[in-house]
Image (cartoon, rainbow, N blue to C red; front, side):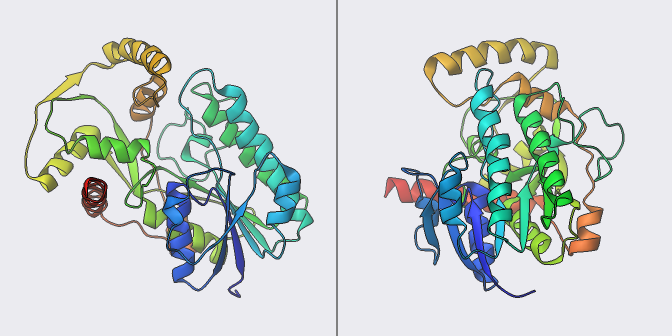
Amino acid sequence: MDKGKVLITGAAGHLGNVLVRELLEHGYEVRAMVMPNEDVSALVGLDVEIKLGNVLDPASLDRVLKGIDYVFHMAGIVSIVPGEEELVWNVNVEGTRNVLKAARKAKVKRLVYTSSIHALSRQWEGTIDEHVPFDPDNPVGTYDRTKATASLAVNQAIKEGLDAVIVCPTGVVGPYDFRGSSMGELVNDLTRHHVHVLVEGAYDFVDVRDVAAGHRLALEKGKTGQVYILSGHQIKLLELKEMVQKIVGFKTLTINVPFKLANIGADIATLYYKIAKKRPKFTRYALETVQSNSVISNTKARRELGYSSRDVFMTIADTVKWWQTKKTRNNG
């Protein structure tokens, strides 16, 4: 395919800024859509055109999409907090519908939509792959339902003539995490000298750089209308801690909290975060995630796209190094 001009919505986020780097490295001309007054420190020094836009403002989308060949739509709100349902729905669902409409209007050649592994049914037993359906009625959380509903909207747009592909990343972690994602802050916290409280559980962790490469490959090689899971490796939370502390060279005490007790604690923690006006790290949603089925296959993406995921220890090592460099930079 020809190297064209690409628009990325949500370009200043963790995955967004890494995708910008990936596309620039492979010869694409990149336009980054950011919100007015948004922190764009992740894009400083990159050869990228920055345009102001809002997925809830169709007129701004029309302006930003002028002259664009391909779109990566990854702007969205990841929320695990009760009470933010309306905003999450508006941005993740209505915002996606607006982008789809604007993309068709602009006659873009292809759109790649960043969905989520959480958009798929959580009731699935056995290995999770692309046969698992999107579940707009997912009982676990608003985020899951909105990503599923938006994914179905993309499928409908495809039926109406839009060339689009859907990708579903798992738990993204890695360097260039300027805003401090939940996963990045967990890894960073495990490098600190204090007692760590963990629950029994596991998750599929994937390197942000591999997910960015998977997005590019979906643009270049993906089949119209197909879904591709971009996963990495399933590891237990205790294994994650052991990896981090092997890298930093010390060990701390771990308190393993039983799941039932953790659920009670999560409710108290959610209330605390709300009162303190801090971003939550410990909620029922987070507990449900590490207790849910995380046996996930990326065979289809490997076969059809040439996708690959690096060793998880390398990812964690690079993540720790990036956070340590960030601390040195901030202290300097």
